[in-house]
Image: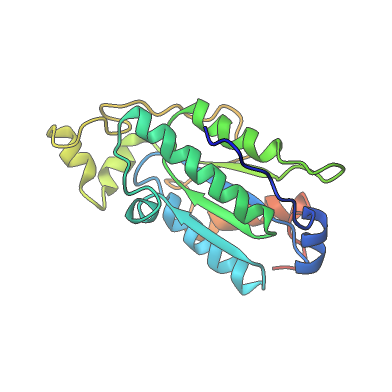
Length: 209
């Protein structure tokens, strides 16, 4: 734990949102490998950008090339991986950017840490940062059939240890804000479902379509 440090306040979130004319929040995609998280997050990011909204996607693989390249896939390292991403997503959202994260994030406790971090980030009378958990729900049989990176095959052969859904658990969300099923709906339909949810709660304007 660092000592002899002081928090330096900046503009309030309300002021920042007013200047940038949008509200920052985090859309947290969780689901098995090959469930479709990254694909949907990418298309949604493009859709939001085309609407003139600031949005940025944090991808599970991409951050391991830099920020989290020192982490492996043990439970302890997975915990730290999600903790760091939670902090980064909160910073993006605090800057009035829509942060989209696509991580397996298999443990309920880790996702709760991410949520609590956002919900505890209120600044006086300002609202806390909205945290929208999107459960990309797909049967593991379908995920294995897709297996675009060949990871399930390697896990079944014992070449990858502690692989979520095979040799490590995935704890599905019980009450996600949004649940999408990529084995039943197209990418476009899943993105439309998320956009409609955001518009209904006035996180983005209904005119942004």
